[in-house]
Length: 80
Image (cartoon, rainbow, N blue to C red; front, side, top):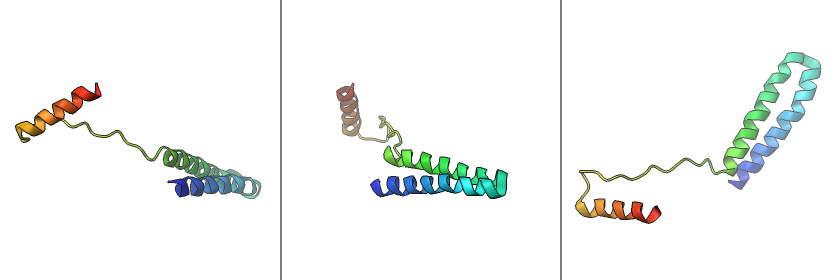
């Protein structure tokens, strides 16, 4: 994950630096490197957080055995 953070940081810096000359020569086309800089900055922050998603909560189910359901209930009680 550290490699991704550094890579996205460098790409965001390059896109930000490219916005100035593109803006000087091509005026409104500078919005493309600016948008790229925002995207790379977002990806850098997402990589810092590990692209985390909330873990799905396990639930009791009629297809589980009684022992599995009891284990799930005990895990829920311990976390509360």
